[in-house]
Structures are given as C-alpha cells and as structure tokens.
Length: 272
Image 1 (tube, rainbow, N blue to C red):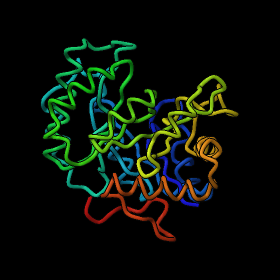
Image 2: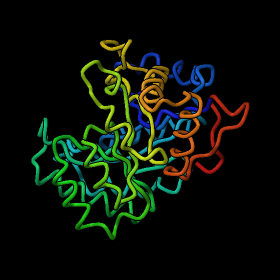
Image 3: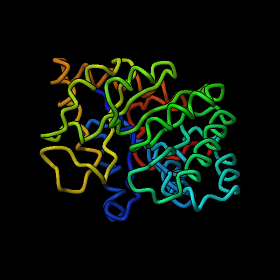
Image 4: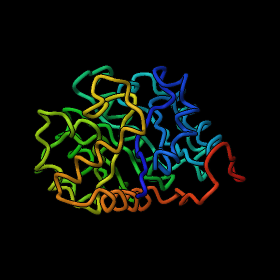
C-alpha cells in the first residue's frame, strides 16, 4: 500500500524535537512522503528548507488567513524565488477562517485573492483552509474562475455533501483528516459524496489526532486510522483506497516524484 500524508506541520513546536526522527521513520510506516505546509513567511521558509533536506518531504508555501494581517508584498517575491524548485508543489495553506477571525475578513479576502493570482502565475495548485466561510469561498472562486487553472484542494474538508457538488465545477479535490474518525463526526454522507478520484488523506499534524489517538499530538503515522475509517465507510479494501488516494495526490501535486527504493532520508535534490 502506498500512502502520502498530504498536509503536515511537523515544524510545529509540538513536533520539532522529534521531527527528524519522524521523517526518517516514514518509510517503515508505509508512508512514501509528506507535504509540509506554510502558514506565513517564516513557516513557508521552514517548510521549503525541510523539503530540500529530505527527499520524502515536499512543501507548500503561503499565507494562512490567520496571518493575512501580517502579509507583506515581499512575501510573494520570496515564493516566486523558490517556485521553480521540484520540492515546492503548491501555494498553501490559504483561504478564509471566519471561526477565529484572527485577521479582518476583508483582509482575508484580499490576501486570498492575491494568492489565487499567484498560484495561477506560478502554475501551482492551491491548498485551501476554509472554516465557516463557504459562501464567500464560492463567490470568490466564481469571480476568479479564470485564475483557477492548476487545481485546488479543500484541506481538512468540513463542509456539506451539497457543497462537494458545488465545487465540482472547479474540479476540486478534498482531503479528509482525523476528524472523520470522531464518534460524533457523522461524515459518512460527505465521504460517500466525494468522487473517489478527488479524495486525498491527511493528518494536519500535530492537530486533530484520529481515534484511537484522539487527545494526543498527531503524527503522520496516524494517517492510517483515517484511511481505515474512510475505507470502512466506502466498503472498500484499505490497500486499494490507499492506492487511489496516492494516485490522486500525484495527479494534483504534479511536481511530486514517485519515490524509489533507497531515496528516503537526507538526500538533496540536485536542482534546489
């Protein structure tokens, strides 16, 4: 079975002390690679540097809605400067968060739109963080559809089955994480509605550890519990579903290389 954890934060302070060991252990846990996310300019730089260090780590760079108020235009210059690297596979995580409202909503919208244009310019897919803001997301995507040319992913999807269908016009992908394993999640209908060729899996570690690890610090190795829950809901063999999500991840993040035997560990890519 081939597994990719499509959304991690192993540079987070809760994992930083064991980060390198976590990465070295991925192969033995059946995880081919992870995609480390940026949330502001500092975490974007850290994600990129980690992806350069390890062959089985890729990076996304972007400004999270929480950090929209701190955005500088020079941040985009940095993203442009590294976008040609094989290890930078997306602009993310970006979007709208109206639950915490840590940045003004108009600021969030502005920075989100800027990054939609940036992703189009760089021909990279978008990784979206959307919370309590699906109507505004739909409005923005409708207005900017001409800039949605390299794919988009709704990470840790928490919306409805109906919105899955709305997003079909944008050829959207959906990543599910540990929250779908929670006792009261009631996401079976959503899982069944997402087209199988648009489904990815993730941990969002160190957040949202799945059952039976709920309450602990989440790690990439726990992605298997999410995979098993989704497979059970779909009445599908877990290994087959792992292969499906693996292929979907490679299709969306087209710059990712399929890892070959012996390529794990501290191996630098020649072009970065």
